[in-house]
Image (cartoon, rainbow, N blue to C red):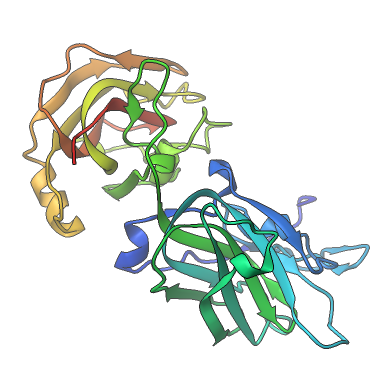
Amino acid sequence: MDNAPFLTAPAAELPAWARQQINLADPRLGAETLACSDDFFAPMARLLQPQAAIFVPGKYDANGKWMDGWESRRKRVAGHDWCIVKLARPGQIAGVDIDTSFFTGNYPPAASLDGCPAGADPDDAASWTTLLPATPLNGNQHHLIPLTATGSYSHLRLNILPDGGIARLRVYGRPSGAATPGADGLVDLAAALNGGYPVAWNDAHFGVAGNLLLPGRGVDMGDGWETRRRREPGFDWCIVALGQPGTIRRIEVDTAHFKGNFPDRCSLQAGYAPGVSDTALVAQAQFWPTLLPEVKLQADHIHVFAEPLTALGPVTHVRLNLHPDGGVSRLRLWGEVAPA
């Protein structure tokens, strides 16, 4: 940001329907903006950036004030502006966050959403159906809107009425279809692309728990889950819901880029708790059986554990324990999906 001071938008207070989903519009999972009617002031790709929107006072580019989002020019003809988003994976959509952070005199008065069902042609106008009718927006605000649409969608079209700027679009849902197995036939049951999501954690001072479930290795130390330095007895933990119940055969704990701050040891517990509320899970997880006993970790290393895993059978959740604290980049839980 050219060393200029900047402001960061506050995080949204997610309702339950969003907390139990993943963001299908996350570019780290493969989502992308494909086309838009106009992005004169701010490019459409910024709409999906996983980081919170920022505002840099006094920063301008060749077209005007620099804004962190997607912004069209002032419309002087009939119609409205739009942007088409290809989701990371076709999925069932629970709701969206249309975020106008830092757009105050230039936000759209309203927005709507259309969806293209999985398997349909997004280039065919007949493929699109309304998921959200024209809905009023306010400036500098998260708009968390549940959707009632059924079925699986591969693309969304965000319509802004008539023009203006949107900082971020989050699309909360669950991937559809079967998970893709690895070369050995096992599925990463915890992967976000397979429907895994973090339920709860005791601390995330330096990182985001959801990063644990992203594809690939972390790009830097900020692309993981890291807790503060523990100054009291105990250990840090994170509970992860598997995309589908399954039997875990192999565990990977990746401490990429964590060198002076990796956990000394880790352990995992697991339980079968379908339909249990998040609040109840936090209490129950303390007593789940051990899946992986405490094992030593190394700096900046992919640790693979196939032994000594406890044979627990199908589970729905795991708790990753960091002893006593530190940072982990990725967690992979390879196994077999339980029969329906």
